[in-house]
Image (tube, rainbow, N blue to C red; front, side):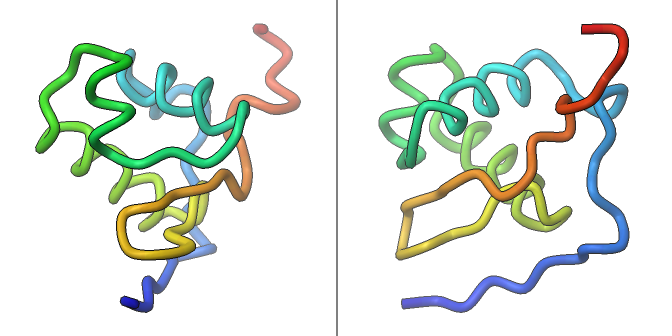
Length: 83
């Protein structure tokens, strides 16, 4: 099992999110996901999904709970008055 560090001081804001991030956050709001499952469900390439999930982990919005399994920590869209 790998340990993933996060950079809690620089969590993403809703304006930092692209369409893929939005779809991944929607999926993470429903529960844990793996990159292959998210890739299949969203239509994005597996490598792109891994990159986007890695970015969410890097910024502290998601965490890797086990090798290849991700869960939501903090949705950057929460509390956004534009929603």
